[in-house]
Image 1 (tube, rainbow, N blue to C red):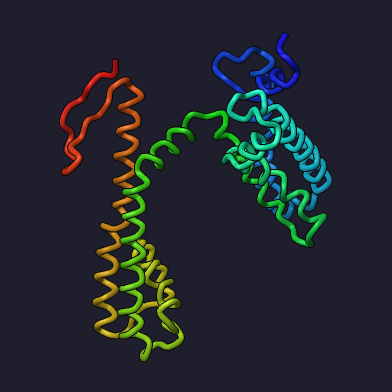
Image 2: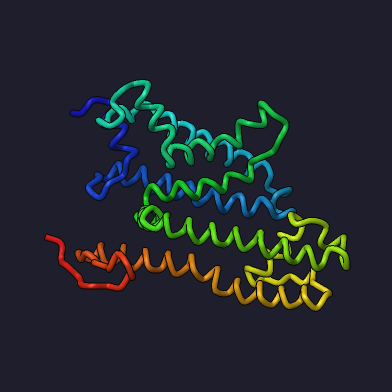
Length: 265
């Protein structure tokens, strides 16, 4: 019989080899997370929120109590893992991990109003991120982002650079004609961002000939620019799924072309 700490850790840390009790705990937590998301949505409806307010409050209190207990037990039992064996430093390292931060943020909105006069209960939707603990899909996304972070950083940097340059140009040609719509370079960034993303709300539009020309250029650049991160992520997912099928993708470090597929031993 394993010690109580290890037993609690195994109970909360779901694996494919988990027993019936571990699976029941996991199913119960997942069901409670989904039920909370539904409750937050329904409570935002004026008619339902007012009519069933006592039920929503009671359900929220019960849910927060469960998730608070879960967080405390995870923090207490994490020393069962060799990587977090130290009672203080190990628990502090675990508390800084993404899943532990999400667990904490999921219950904080309930307790914060006791300290500061602010209602943050809508942040209970953060509970949905707790599902990442039970799904490999979140891990796949995290691995792809980690693998492609350098490429994504370049894409974001280029986007910010173009945002500043185009905003400055449009401000220069439109400020005199529309001082309220284009009050500053910073204020012009709203229009430029909306145009780059090809949303085009139409609440702010250039009036000068040069401004309209720059608007056209901005829209064309936006189509290509915002497709770049999508292509990077798509490439990352392709490589990830290729690896998961048991093959290693080999690409040229200079041009990025696929050279060959090698089976992993």
